[in-house]
Image (cartoon, rainbow, N blue to C red; front, side, top):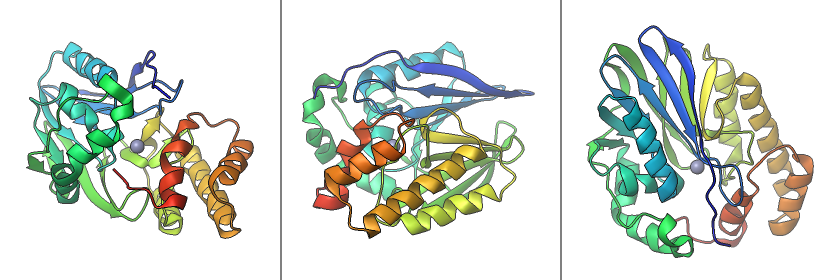
Length: 275
Ligand SMILES: [Zn+2]
């Protein structure tokens, strides 16, 4: 199926003093998966989180960032799934790109494979790969007056992911640890992912920025745990492939973007490559 493009959503999510937090979400329609990318706007500059998937959304996200009239000082990539970094090639080749070493290495070694693996998307896929040039350092850093906490989280939706927290603002960039209002992309180790989300519920953070869908609260984090528990139980009962998809669609009719099943089912149950 050829992907179709429709209007993205952009919004100011929160404003505190000099800091404005923006989110930009690609379409929930057709086979789109509501990729969510974000901007921390401070007095003098912008920090971006992820770069969109398909070319038109990456360019629209760039236009939105440029409309704020401040330089993009950093763009952080959360993890190696291409729906989070394809857009760098289309719209952010001139931007300093930060990522964990594992993510950099994957894009360096498999970025082109990933691009050719998505040939069916035609010119919605960027015509070049940009390998991140800057290692995201872990721990605490103050950028343009805002305190950031960077962490490396393993064995959840992906083997390695970067999380970014703004403790003074109560904002947690969880990216694909949370799918907000959409179906989740399931990996093999759901148990550890569930434990990571349970810990998240016990923090003081209030606003959770997902990798897919609209900004989330703790109730949505709890709903993600419930979804993962249901999936884990079904898989434990031997439900696979189309039957698994049917089961989850029936159990969660309110969740959007069922296109995600077609992306991960061949990998989860059929051993397909993860490019
Ligand atoms: Zn994703």
